[in-house]
Image 1 (cartoon, one colour):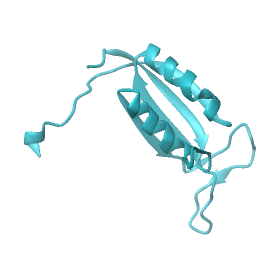
Image 2 (tube, one colour):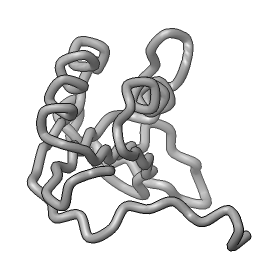
Image 3 (cartoon, one colour):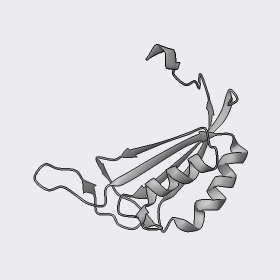
Length: 115
């Protein structure tokens, strides 16, 4: 069970970032699950730029861009997210991390009898 008051950790990285032989975003989500965080979602950006370059990376049909932005959203308590961020911090070569207070409206699994 997760409390009504929670936190959202948002990580902005590059889709080409890797750790332990895997895409970094995949490694982060697997680590979040192993550490019992409430949930994680990976989003691939259509366009963006960041601290390493002022060049805009974009997804176009004429040219499929590499290095598009990846956003990983993780939700749990502040304490669990701070501990997780401490664990992954040195594995992220570049990017941005934000932490914000959120109100959790519901957190439930589908009833297996409904399927």
